[in-house]
Image (cartoon, rainbow, N blue to C red; front, side, top):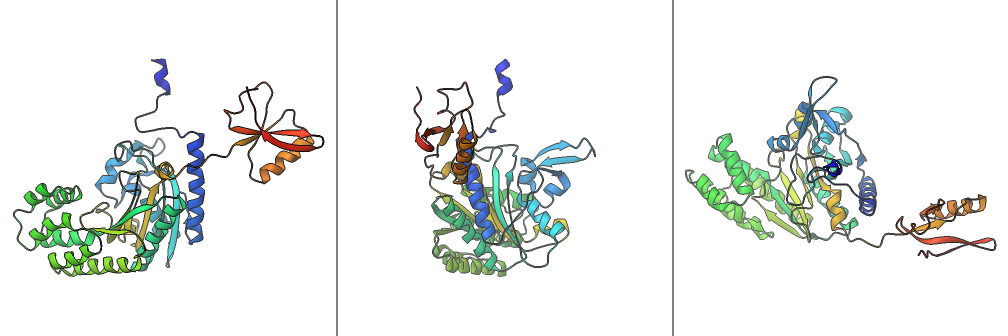
Length: 387
C-alpha cells in the first residue's frame, strides 16, 4: 500500500534525463526556427478563468478541460487543454496590433482523457500562429513552416492532408439541418461511418443528399478536387473552397499532399483550410492546423488567423535518436588549474562533472565516459575505466 504513493495518474508520466534532453533540444531548435521566420515567443498562463479559456472553442475542448475553483475569487478556473485559444486572446486583446502578427509558444497542456491509445494526458504543445492576413499566402506560409519544423526533427512527413470546413458547412446549411442533426452527421463523417451517414441523410433531397454521401470517398491526390467539382453542387462556398485547395496544391506541389473533404477535425472553430501532417511510426496526425478567422471575435476583435501545433513528446519519440554525448569526469579535489580547464571545456560545449569524494565506480551511471588526467603540466582526456 505504501508504494502506491509514488504512482502517477494514468497517462501521466515523468520524462527521464535522456528523453528530457532530446525534448529540450527539439524545443530550442524549433523555437529558434520559428524566430528566424519572424514568430515572437509568448508564454500564456497554465490556468485561466473558464469563461476566457473556453470562449468560442467548442464543446470538445470543454470536455477535455480540467476545472477547479479559484481559492481567491471563488470563480471557476480551467487548466488549459489547448494553448492556441490563449495565443488568439493575446493577439486580439493584449497586443492589439493592426498589421500581421506572428506568435509561437511552447508549454504543457492537460487533458481529462488521453486523445488516443498510449497517448499522454499532458502533451507538451508547441506551435506557431499567424494573425492579420486573410489571404491564402498565410496558409501557405504555415504549411511550409510546419514542413520545415518536421525536417528539423528529422521526421519525414508521409503526407500532408488538406481539407476545407466550408464544404460541409455549405451542405449542412443547404440541407437546413437542425444543430443536433448537424452535430450527429458531423460525427459520422469524421469517423467515416458511411452506413450512419446514409441513415442520417436518407430524408434529404438531392443533390445535397448525394453530396454528403460522397464526402467520405473524396479522399486522395489532387484529382479528388476535380471529382469534387463534378459531384458536389456548385454552391458559392464550395466553389471558393475548391479553388483555394487548388491554389494550395499549386503552391505546395513539392510536398506530399493529399486531400480529404470529410476530415472535420477542428470543425467547431476552423473557418477555412484545415491540414494535418502524418509520418511513419505515428498512428495519428503528428501535427494539426488550419484557419480560424472568427476565433478572436470572442475576445472583442475578429482577426484572420492560421497556424499549427504539435506535441513535443511525440516529436521526440519519432525523431531518430543519436548517441547521447557523454560527460567528462574531473578529479577531486578541484584546484585553480583544474577549474580553469573545466571552464575551457564547458565553453567548448563539453559536459564536465566534478568527482565528489566517496562515489568511486558510480560515475558511468551519471553519464561520464571520459576522465581528465594530469600528465606533467597538461590535462589529457582519456576513456573512463571503472570496475
